[in-house]
Amino acid sequence: MSVKIKICGLTRPQDIEYVNEALPDYIGFVFAKSKRQVTPETAEQLRKNLDSRVTVVGVFVNEDIAMITSLCKKGIIDIVQLHGDEGADYIELLRRKINNPIIKAVRVKDSESVKASCSLPCDYLLLDTYSGNDYGGTGKAFDWGLISDTDKPFFLAGGISAENAETAIKNIRPYCLDVSSGVETDSFKDRNKILNIVNLVRSVK
Image 1 (cartoon, rainbow, N blue to C red):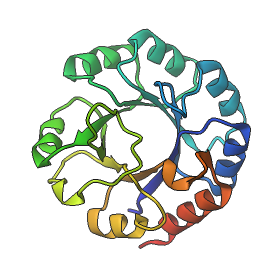
Image 2: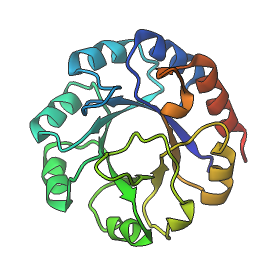
Image 3: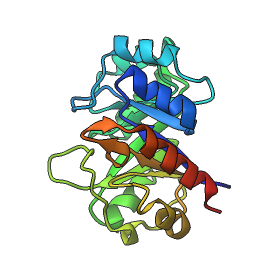
Image 4: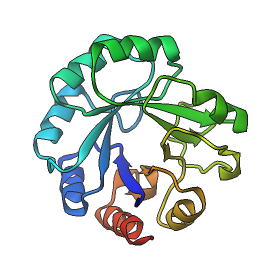
């Protein structure tokens, strides 16, 4: 099965134009505090213009469950990505409110952190770079050798770009590559970089 690709952190109408052209499998709207944060209202407007073949992921950090539930029920997002300190209890509570798939991000400090996360009641893991107090978005890769056998499909994040995407696919075989800063120029999404990496991922066998 070919590896999928997610372009995360879309904020502008032109970002939607770029992904409609490239057609990645997933895009991400960041609702947590970050330079790529969007409001529910902005996300709703952007979603209206998005090609229906692209699945929308909402990214949250320790968010109130009622807000996530609302975004799911309104059809603004299809999948929930939890990027904070949410544990099994939080995920179970959220599951009782929504039927949407749940991704739990893990900041990989060591191979044990990956193993421990496999027991969480989520559908996917997202393996990201560990960085002190940051909840992700570092733009730096981590040591992929720390990825132990996991029985959950996982998104690979942290410094993914056209330069290392092929290596990641061939050596790690993630379910999906998660790209954000790797397709930006001057902190904004770059059409050519998006087209390039989507085509690259699709071409790797």
